Structure formats: structure tokens, C-alpha cells
Length: 114
Image (cartoon, rainbow, N blue to C red; front, side, top):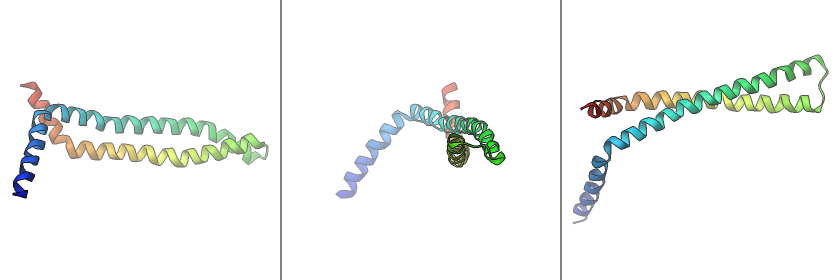
């Protein structure tokens, strides 16, 4: 009895997935591309942080740093320690998901052509 109720519930879920399959795959594909976009934007922000950090770091090495130079160097260093690995991880997730679901996405594209 309980298994029958569970099967009916699962059938409803499968029916809903079946009816929405193409939209679901398209949405999933767009969601996967957001990882790449966010990863590249994060790495671009890392470059911008580096461009601010490096001159401050050189100023500190020359011994001419004031409070704001120290502040910018420390915040820049922390920013680089956070954004570079995070951007790389986002791109890694994008590649992993793209590889994992490539067959499903390709199937949806082929069905859409017919």
C-alpha cells in the first residue's frame, strides 16, 4: 500500500519533468554558463585589485608608505587571496558541469532542431 502511494507520487514528479524537460535543460544550460561568466568577471576584478595593490606594495617597499598605503596594500592582498581562487573555482565548476551535462544539452539541441 505505502509503495503504491510512493509510486504515484514519483509518477507525478516524472510526468512534470517530462512535460518541462526542454525548458529545464535550457534553463540548466544557462545556469551553467553563469558559472563561467561569474568566474571570468571575478578574475577581471582580481586584475583590477592587483593594479591597485602593486603600486601600494612598491611604495611600502621603498619605505614611503602612510596609513592609506598600508590600508590599501592589506585590503588588496586580502582581496587577491579571495578573488583569485574563487574565480578559478567558479570556472572549474563551469567546466565540470558543462562536461557532466553536455550529452543532455546536446540532446535538447537536437530535439529542438526537429
